[in-house]
Length: 387
Image (tube, rainbow, N blue to C red):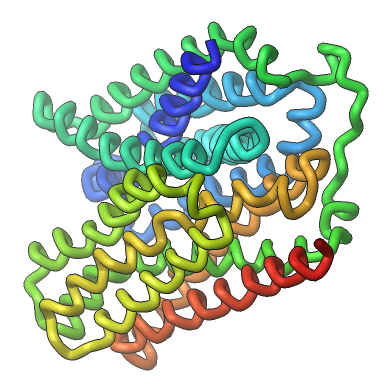
């Protein structure tokens, strides 16, 4: 029964990743149909990001009340409804309205699942969980392209993904009894524990450094994913089509790296997985900075492989660093911090690239990788002294 539950949790993260790349893939057609400019996709993205931050911060309180299983199922339902809404929306402002439940659902399920797996499962399962997200993120645009190939309609693509998401939602509702066997309960099931709260969570030693570390990691990952192709085109003179293919290899490196890291995670331990990941990413960034196009493109893949274990390893170590009783609130705040890094820093580099030069790309990323290493090592040293 536990194996069945784990499979459902893996599928949950596949479904969580499915819609994440749809907006960017479909927007060139969506913008024409809706009479919106190319840049207006940023408004929808920001609404979704804000929703994820809000629901992440609320996740501990909601999980204490209802349990992770119900939060995950209801959140998946919200995302399904939002995807169906996207498929029938006839105006940009309606898309903005529908983006609200999408963001709220995505943040809640992300925080609830990450904390649940961090407490109940080994490190390898956390890493493979995030590998499943990468599989979903890759499958989403593929499903979109297949559906669009039939009638040339982006609405068909969103509708197809919504159907897949709804099927996963039904499986999640059916699986609720399985979660209780693994210690998942809310107030309605007799759990009298009270949520920690954001203020008290922030007061725990080393929580603030680890939040900044999360911010740095997501700033690095999303900035690299967004600007890699532009860097190859503008700085190395690679043609746009080839650059797009090589730029995607950073994300591919993360997915492949997470699959491979899962086989060694339990033997290496979380803190060493973080150290190894940062070291490999740093080596990749060094190659990206070199004037050789071949080495620079190889550096993108290497940086992605290095980034692979860092995010899941930090999450998995949260109960160990801060206690299982506090991890729900802290993971929720970590997710919020991660979303802020993803939302704020990539546009910042766009300004840097425009006014100073896109050649700063590897150095800009290096700043966040170095700061990430310093902060995680600070937390590790503090735990060692306490022990």
